[in-house]
Image 1: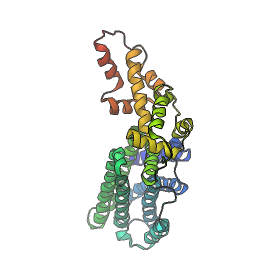
Image 2: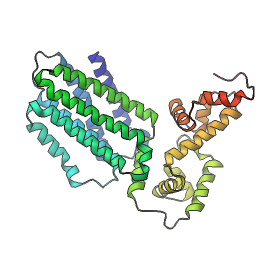
Image 3: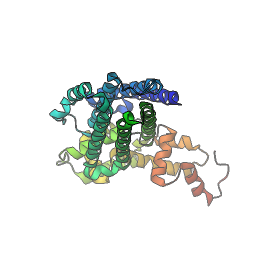
Image 4: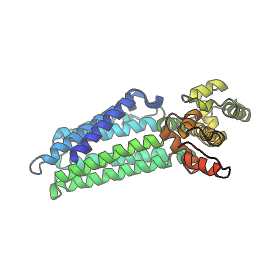
Length: 343
């Protein structure tokens, strides 16, 4: 069982590293955050491998120093990765730039008996700070209700592992610690995988929210009402949202705006972010097609509406409509006596 969890974690680390290397969904991450992502993923994979040794070694010896260093660095990688998502580029503070040196120094000198609790308490504190940054996005924080809960859950998980590591030398044992931490890392990878499927535009959405929250108004010389009407025309008449690769820059070019201006316009005039606006129009298009084209498969309707996968289509549709596409179609067509509906 332990081997299966370690194998799953290493596989997920490789998969996520590949997505990070290829610029997942054109995620606009600053280079320190992207580098930190690789450090975090490599650290988690090495940590899991270390748990195999720890769980099978004889006795209850203290963890090796190399294992301690890896645990410290993976926590820092997690923090720097999300810090790059939740802060404007160039807004990091001097102390945050000094963190790698400070963390590495602590990892090398902290007594081994206290190293794991200290590392994971540090990780808990960093996760709490990230949660505060999400909460400080003011009116935009409603976009991140789910993500905020996930960050809090990660902090609780780190506290649980810290407690196990603290009690390991006093009867709990390092094998129990290894099993506990392995299970939580595996659960964390599963949670991240699910989150990326549930919110496929998570990073672009976060970067957009940060740009809007931290920037001064960029629309002082723009007729907001007229520009909002043009934006509606682009979606409702030109139906640009049906292009799978549609991005913020494409629509901004159509309107003669910068990407920051378009982000602010959508947020202030429509009360949502650009990715959510696109999903709203795609779902509305799908709603019409499901009824008007009853013989078209549900998947083909989703693809024709602009979604790039069945999972993203189903998640967005259920979030907006309250039911999955097939159930919606059956309910809407029930009164019309429609027959031979596609499965």
